Image (cartoon, rainbow, N blue to C red; front, side, top):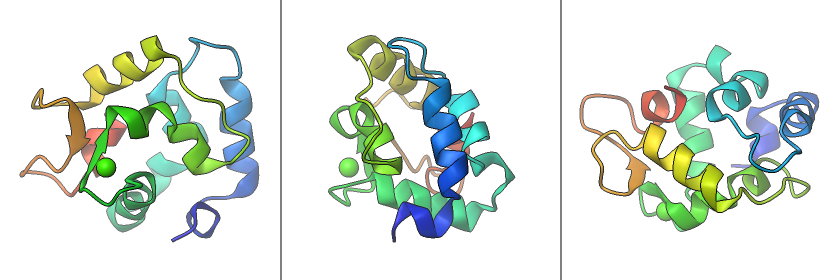
Length: 113
Ligand SMILES: [Ca+2]
């Protein structure tokens, strides 16, 4: 599933443009700008699956670092600090990766809050 089938190119560009400066990344704001907050759980799960490059069922630290490239090939890499902050915020059960947490739809709520 290509990201552009799920999200609008102009929303992706707007979201990427908002965080061009290193260490400015805010995943909540990013997902809001990219239109993910307004989408249903099904679509959010598809985005999650597109970002889970190795289809492990989790977004691991190394996938998170290149998460913006999952939205557009023009996306920059996250800095180590940004990757860590994102992971810490989204990793509810502290296993070092983002994934299904049992009580919620896969990835969706975890990614967005
Ligand atoms: Ca993975």
